[in-house]
Image 1: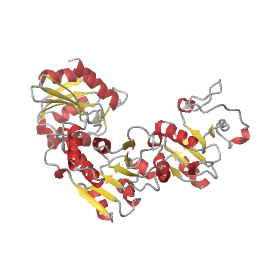
Image 2: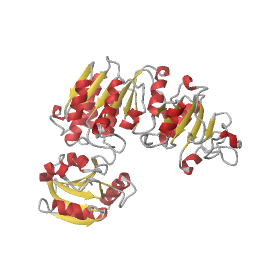
Image 3: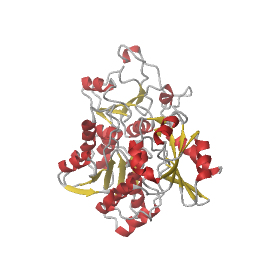
Image 4: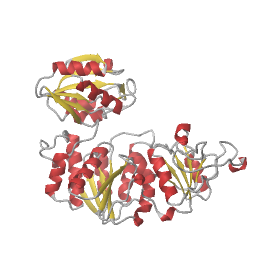
Length: 459
């Protein structure tokens, strides 16, 4: 677990007790900090609450009742510090946070709407995230480097790919941030290690001192605009990753859209510009097909070279990269037909590159639509032999595609898999890339992808 002696005997509030929040609480407590933790979910709070036997679900110790004076006018009465670990469960909106070192919030907390932002401002307490705590702990870790990767699309794949290349080359590496285990929950790397962090705009917003030896920006397209005052504000959030860098550190930018080109023009110091056109042949990389993965691969190669990885080890890493679940995932090949799970593609912009990856596709799409068009996909419609629509958006998408490709309104994913498998010929691809959210028929995109995999297994 990553922590710092600098956290000891200081007060912190942690708001949000999902994976990163729990890891933050534990890392702070283990470092000797006093922690006030809260989540709106009683179930989440129960993970830290003491049991009747005196032992908390998180192993924190026993608790006693406290007086009403411990809380401000409204809200629950907080429990006192849990014995030996300096933890109490209390709502920072209903309990004084004056004099606290920081409020650590989950990236999912919308600071443009949530009252904790004003509460912290009034108390003159900074609002940060777990990545900032990691940045503050770095000076006590063995000598290492940090790679920070951001962008609207492709962050997870590029982060996992860089991590895989480093491991293939024998470099100690850890992967965290917006992917995998929370970074504070991981064990410190030995000297010479590399921490590879996927960073959302929300995480960058909550970071004040993360100076990445290598910082990467892939692309900027409209997203999360409910949290920002338009695209310019969203792009500025991404650009902060470079503003935090020392000038002798490396900035790698895929300058292929208006915003990334503008940011590239603002960055001083060591700068590497990459492009999907840098990649001439993806045939040896089965899990890195399509133009979007060309950009991801170009960025990953630039990162690896900046870290001193030899080209032959980079080539080995690209060829052996297994891919991520639900992102252009090769599920099976049956009767010469390849089945690909791209359930993570929840809008037309993210589906379009998948359609560009294969020349003969039986396309399964639909769900809960985020837009009423498929315009982003139309440049690749010539790759689609037939479409199979599912879910609430099925009838809409069937109308949009009528006259362009043969369409079957399959309605359910199981039926779509059967319909597509019956029609597909040797050398063709059955692709689930829904261009939609999943919530009309599935819990999330992962459940949808798992259902696709299960349907293929039954063929």
